[in-house]
Image 1 (cartoon, rainbow, N blue to C red):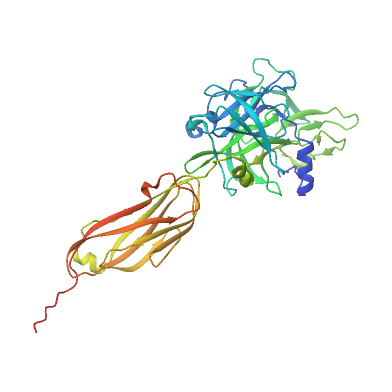
Image 2 (image 1 turned 30 degrees about the vertical axis):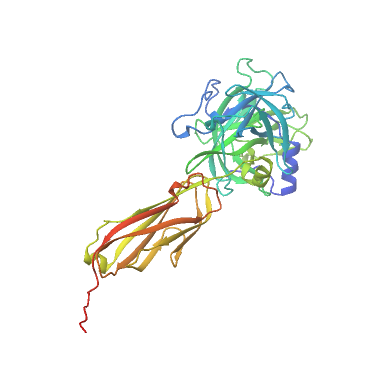
Length: 441
C-alpha cells in the first residue's frame, strides 16, 4: 500500500514548507538520466504549454555559481515567480523580444508568489501567459512543469529496494548547469489551507514524469483548459528531500525518491528523523507548487489592467427556415446555442429571447441553465464549453409572412472583448395556420 509522507495539520504543514523548501537545481525524471531531453518546447498534445511565456532571469545575487531562475510573463510588464528566491533582485534582466529590466517586486502574505514589474513592456501577446482562475481544476490535473538545472545523481537503494536518485548537488556538468527543461506530473491534492497543490514522484512509467530539486523554484506549471494552456502554479518545495541510511551516525544526503521505504527522512532544519517502514512500500516523495487561483484578488488589485475576458457568442439552429403548415401546427423546434470561446469561464450569464408575432412556446429544455419567460439564465459556462437551449414552438398566424427572432446576451461576470457575436437573429417564412373568417354585415 502506498504511503503518503505529508502531515495533515495545516499549521505544521505550512511551517514545514517554509523551513524546508530546498530550492531546485534540476528536473529529475523517473525513466531517463539523459541531460539533453526536453530542452525545447513541448510538441504534440503538450504544444503551447507555456514554454514561449517563460523566461530565464539573470539574477545578480546568484549562489553556487548559478544565476538563472525562471519566471513567467503574465502581463505586458509583469513577471510571476517565487518569493523565496532571494537571488532575484530589481535591476536583474531577462531576454524576450530584447532585454528587459526588473524594476520592482511585490509579494503576497500567506503564499510564495511574487510579482516583478519590468520595462520595456512585452508587445507580442503570444508571450503573455493566461492565468488559471478555476480552483476546482488545479488540484486534479496533468501539469506541465518547467525548471532549470542538470542531471540526476547517483542511484539510491535500501536493501533490495531501488528508491530513486541523489541530487547531483554542486558536482554538475557546467555545460548543463541552469538549462531549462520541462516535464509533467499529475497533481492529486491541495494542502489543507488550500494555497498549494501536491503531486507525487511515483514512477508511473511515464517517460516525462518529473520531480523538482533545488533550484527549480519559480518555474511555472501549466494546465490545459477548454481554450488552451494556463499557468496554474509556481514551483515551491519538495518533501521529503533529506535522507539517511542510519541515524547513528547520520550521514544525510538529498535525493528524489519514488520510494522512501527503508530510509530515514527529515527536513533541513531539524535533527529529528522518521523511518519509513519497508512494509509501507512504495512511499514516494512529493512536490509542492503555489496555486495561482488562490491569489486572484491580490493579482487583480496589484496589476493595473489585468482582466479575465470570456468571448461569449450566440447562434441559432433550425431544421429549415420555411416550415410546412404541418410542422408549424404540430411543433417546430429551434435551438439557441451559446458558446464560450474563452479564455476564461463565465458566470451569471443571461440571454434574452425576443419572439416574432405568431410563435407560441410549446416547451423547452436546456443543457445548461433554465428558461423562464424568454429569459435564459446560466450560473456557469466553462471556458470552451457550449450550451444549447432547445425550444418547441407552435406557429399560429393568419397570414404567411417572414418573421425574425432575436437572442441577445444581457449579463455576464466577465468582460467580452468581442461583442459582435453577442446577439443573433433567425428569419423564417411562416405558413398560414389560422383560418380567415370574413363577416358580411
